[in-house]
Image (cartoon, rainbow, N blue to C red; front, side, top):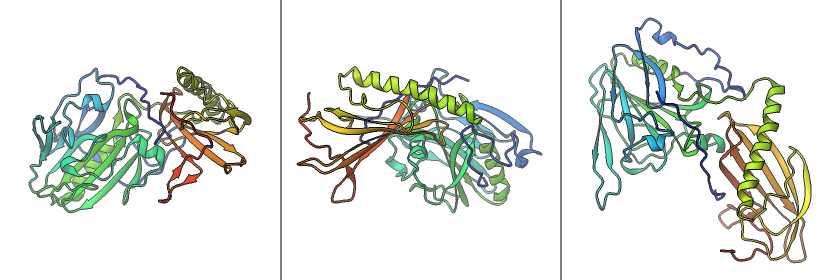
Length: 380
């Protein structure tokens, strides 16, 4: 199976039974076993595909809709067809198929749909890519990605799981409707849905989506086998985990902070902006400085005295880091006091892959916006 390279993706600043969550080091979920009791008496086969590895009942069939190349370094690049849903393949006793209308001058991407082939007492599990650019036929309203995990997105009705040390979401739906979608599956008596995030590549806004369509009778047995399959999943490459030892975790924090700060400042200063120069490099520290350039706005026309603080750098459920910076300023003769907060999400190598920000101002609809005083025009 191909090894996935960890790729940094920049982001502009606009921007199964339930299991317990893991700590920073990614301890196994309580009760987790490498081979689930649901599969203990079932002969198993092993698959390594779709940038995952997993065990499944040997009597089931695995069908590739598209074979991911060994050179693929993230899911979006690996998914050759951009239709909705983007499907990698099927596993089960009634494998489905994916049909697509080709792209045309008016249809910019293939328009794809799943042909389910359920009969009584069968199951079909669809493995696909969730997140990026979705919509189309499925009319999907929610996915589960590293970006969602970082932002604390709540998926209505979903249970929190931990699979291979990363946060996963699970929904069981009675009937034929795929959760968070307008898609229905003919013959299904229940549908299971898992959202799995990815640490690598375009991780911040893509991941895997697994849908298991089950037709009774024997639905509970089939559900247990599907759940056991997902419990056995390992990502490729394996997630990079933070240390569990407090001393090693603190050492990693300091090392990654230096790496991250140096990389971010270097990238910003290549543009001769220097908007991060005022921030200290010690967690919890603050210092005052006059600035003429902010992170989210055009240059200031008058220097502004601000207090720049490195608020925190904490582990995330994705086994990454969240670096929080803030600026505050007192009221002046023609402007009110204000503040701005910026969060960088960093991978285990200290590289930024996404971020978010907010200011102290409030628009009429209650949203935050930045109210730095004396903002000038763009230099471009």
